[in-house]
Length: 387
Ligand code: SF4
Picture 1 (tube, rainbow, N blue to C red):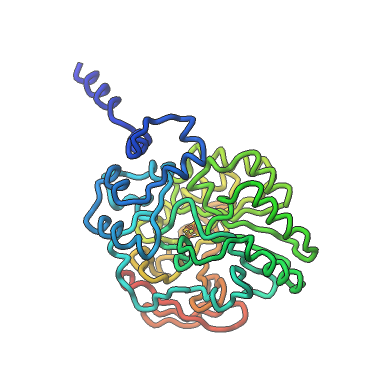
Picture 2: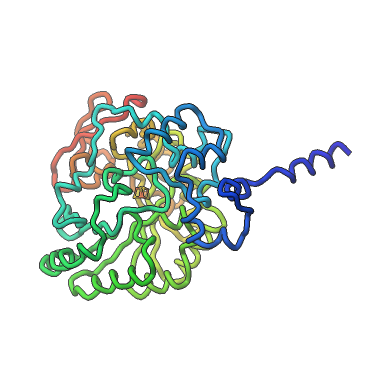
């Protein structure tokens, strides 16, 4: 009898999805939930939204009040539904809900850690490596990661709309015949309409010396509903490679698996990048589960990034020592396909440096000297908490 009473009480608990729809005065409707435009219209962006769904800490409340001025806050209902509403240390929550820790500026923090602004060839086109460019397609994302390397740009409204910049970008690319690889990122290019994306990719494909088109996107994890057969057809037509971004195994939901299936069945090569984050995934068992899950979904984990020293993110960073320790617990202990390369994007614009004995040329406490592909030495400073 007691057992029956307990289970009926459990059944009446609203699910996270029901509670999230309730934030907007709506009932849970599976059809609406699976529509990516509905998801975009119902993103959590304001303190009241989060207050109605999460039991907030004082630090999170301050972060949502003041932090949002520095860097926009937005979370899709799909991603928010993965959060533990009662636990502020939830690894999903730590990635996208701001906290007052963002007001702390630590030694070595930088606005533009990868030195992209200095390498800007024309507005929204970064030419840092000889044969590769980064094209910033737009400045919006489905949700905003609190550790974003481009928080100075993303969501700030300072990037001109692409149609106004496109002529200059195409002229530059036509003139620079050494460029064979274009990475579209932002912001998230998969938030563009199918038609706009088709036009953009078509213009790039017309340039003969461009061999490889890649898109960097967190949409399959934040907004898997956006991965439709029509979008896959556009990506396939232009022979695009996708670089995805996942941080934690909880993100690999059935909807994400279905999105990855659509992409893989459509012939789109899939890789994933993961940023090493304190309190989210700085644990070998968690990362192993994530990488195994990705491989199962036909996504190759290819980079594990040491988090960039972006201003106000030291509470989310961990030490290089920790990263090395995790890598030693992965390498040789699982399939090679499930082990990414551990890299630092050299602060100051030195590009990606794999962390291995040959590239570590000096260390004093939390200060590391790392040598890049061109033999130049760059400094990375661990966050104070990890030092
Ligand atoms: S999805 Fe990428 S560009 Fe957008 S906020 Fe996250 S890290 Fe930054």
